[in-house]
Length: 164
Length: 449
Image 1: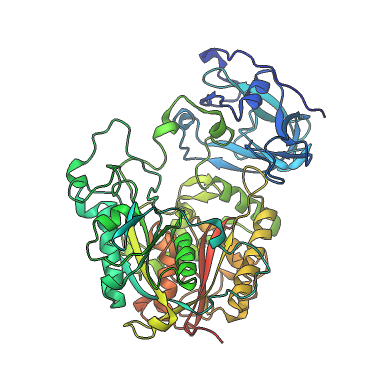
Image 2: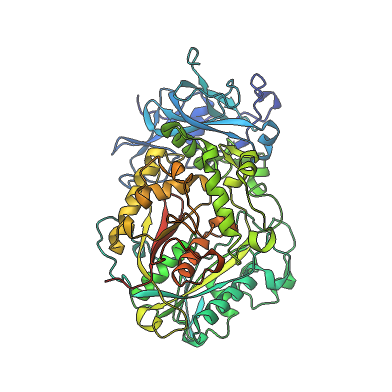
């Protein structure tokens, strides 16, 4: 792994064709990157997964924050590229979703993914391609990148073939 | 600016140093020197009906006055006010909707026209409480009643007030829970998107923890049914609660198991019902309490968890480590052990984490993974092992304070039909909200030795 600088990119304009139709999953809300999280989202648009890392502690943290949760430093935070591999910790099945854009697709899976680079770091996933409520807990997953309603890409995860 | 002693002072959130967060602090320095002597509750409502008297400001004034009356003190003798300025259950005044001027103008207002409608400042309370002429100390315990109790108890112990009102109120408006605002939009800011894009309802984190709990210990969701049934039964014996006042409906195991999922394995009855309600307590020094109308209920300790989960949602391992740590802090500061607890009133909104709280406490010797089996035994108010005798949020609606009220009333032997009969109510623990991050207190019939 290495620390990477993430280049700004142009956010792709909204296009309904981004909808993932192969798994019946609804379109996620668009994302308006803010100062704190812009490198994360810009990397996602390049199909790269980066996580905030304190270079002083050599410790990852997610969600991103202004300071290191461990040492309190605000000047040692950088972005570190991840392997894009993880494991399913556990999951829930959402039947009553507060997000309007996702309600037509209820029920749907939301799994908690733990990164192989550091199992303490979690990401959520709809696990595209995995049937509802039929989740292989503990299975290996790999990151994919999916477009949201305004074209911004977001990390998603798929079960690695042969794991089911 | 709140009016204090004829002048004006700013009301600010209590400093972090007020809360007893660390292990190893020893006995609380004010153990047994602070007591609850008055309780006041407003009526409950599912949502605001638009009338001034039932606004969050209106019901707060009612709760405060009832607490003062219950304690039998002269309002002019009250010198402290600790409260939570946030009142939302998840409902916010819709952008562009005309303001409710009839209700706003029915009271003395502050600079924020929605003060008293969708929020509540100490300024608003004092501007509308002419009888509170002696207030010298105000502070915010931000979060819920549990925070405010810690702040008020510490303030009295430290001598910053001698007779202090503790207030928590909730407003609820029309519309479904958290379904407006950004959640109805097509895009959200990047920081919130990290968590929110996947559409998880509020109970999701708890649902995942519970799923992991069941996987690890070989338990099933239906084993929660006795807890839910017991909670609602107790809640229906709580005349101040929403379900007792408006919908006296029991929940059978069959009802529970047939309920729709919200985020499986959390179903409808694992979630609490947002309501409008206000409660106030009157705290004073142990010395003053002995001369007042009600039996004093002494505070032996307050303890706080400020543990930050490593990532998006606490894992079961993180939950269990923190509830055990919290229990050690609770017992250490109070000078008690789990064996001293007459009953427990830990938080339950969501129901699926109550077992984390009581396993961490080691209530009745419970170890991790044993609570759901314990729920299959007699956990009623008439048995030797009462669980959540208040009924909690599941039995009474979302307030996050039924547990505190119940501890006080049980120890005073004035819990009515809800009075525990299988144990002598001498020492109890309450608090929350979440198993990772919360505020807890120990109540006692005596100031301790």
